[in-house]
Image (tube, rainbow, N blue to C red):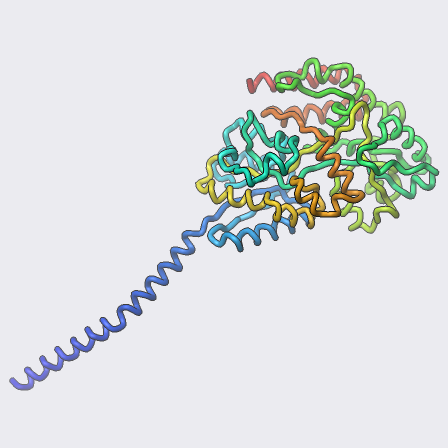
Length: 443
């Protein structure tokens, strides 16, 4: 009996000890569990934003990578999942995935295509997020901001602007004894003078061509970007101011004159050729070409030096001095579940400090006046040419949901009069019919 009592007493003592130990260590276990929950919660609380952009050159890719790293350091609760997509596939993939609901939270859009996305309701208007300190009114060119609006609502925020200029081959000019063009951004040569110089410099027998006036006959958006300025420079537009018709504009006497001038460079003056050899400018087979500011770095990477091998002058003018503007800008998907965080990212990327870092790497024209003012490179030759033109002599491409079809129609129009040497008037009539039919569809 005593043995049984001893065993029971011993068991009770063991239970008390174990209970005491549990009470003793429980706070530590609970604290560890709480920390574990916090760690898991911390992971779950991070916001992941899908950001899509077109795959750019090495400088652009580096700039975005560095800015995203900077943003995530300052915003540890937001992760930016950037996907860079090849230009040729970008538009198709973006439009397809938006429809299927698998698109991004934040997207880069080439500004002339803005109206297509805004009209479809796939972009979030940014006006509710814009405060005075963003600087929309006083730190961005008016033309830049107007090109990012549709029906008076702002849908995109810019990082950079674009501009094109005349590049000339110094060796070919010197061999021909021709003076270099003026470097003053406000004093471009006329197109007539440019054609005259092209005649003097070219040497068809040696395979040396005078000028590539608008980047040949490539694909994508380049044909419209490089060729629409001919209409503006000759004092006309492709569409009416309300973007409702091409009639009376694309077939105006000034528009026909611009197109005839372009055709004559290939088939009457013969200072331009339909097929250029590869790297014609770099290999001293092309005296003049029209390119953007990005070409300076590309040429220098290929061991061509500014001032030794090539120079830059303002884009030639006709009745008016005009260059195209518009570039890739950032917008928010209308279906994102994190609009506030998406805006935080866009606001950061388009801030003074971020744009300054971006253009220091890429040498693109900054969208903010304040950045251009504080970086000497943009106030000196040759980048001052691109900057002054973009800020003071630029024009937006037509702002309409029909723009992609207008771009294609312009591409075909210049191919018809350039490559096929078709009659300008009949080619214009076909382009107008195509454009007007598309405009009627979106009324």
